Length: 214
Ligand code: AP5
Image (cartoon, rainbow, N blue to C red; front, side, top):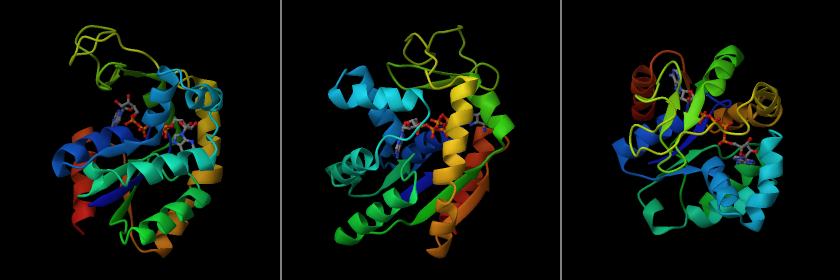
């Protein structure tokens, strides 16, 4: 099973990808997570990516394309994978298609999670993440049992530097200009499925699973 999750920042791509990963036992490949790890590890890539990410812009295509080409060739991707946050524009989507053709593979479904800009702002300004285990919280919809502390591993919860109002607005603009056109791209390939990302995480997950089974 090879899946792509599309949708604006805060649509719930990461949340749904984690559930799909458990259900199908295939890896979640998040370019955002890979880049944030590089920032945390103080690599040269991380230093360059941080400036772009903090501004809400896209990291250069060649960087993320090379990351994905290597990642999907790894052993744990043999049974499939979930792409979360990639591709982000037509150039990335075309390179992905070329790579999959070379590997004699194809994407089974592209799930487009649709959510309003207002909901995006609510979700992202209230999000906190555990840097130790990656668990995600929201101060209203999924509060941790103890404020600021991860329920799972006890790590100290952090807010992402790009989750402030100004940068979220910029990320939404970038989404509309560069990423939203991918809906047409995948509609033409006839594997795009739209899911309203409103309601509880469980309801949305159930709808995502129905779309995968179609
Ligand atoms: P990335 O990490 O991909 O961020 P994003 O696309 O902006 O998406 P988010 O992670 O913010 O949101 P999400 O849709 O995963 O939602 P989540 O599940 O977390 O990218 C960050 C940056 O990296 C980019 O700006 C760019 O600079 C760079 N980058 C990454 N990939 C790139 C690429 N391919 N090319 C170039 N640059 C790239 O949920 C959000 C919150 O909502 C959480 O608090 C969650 O608990 C809550 N929530 C989830 N579902 C619900 C629900 N149903 N109801 C209520 N709350 C909910």
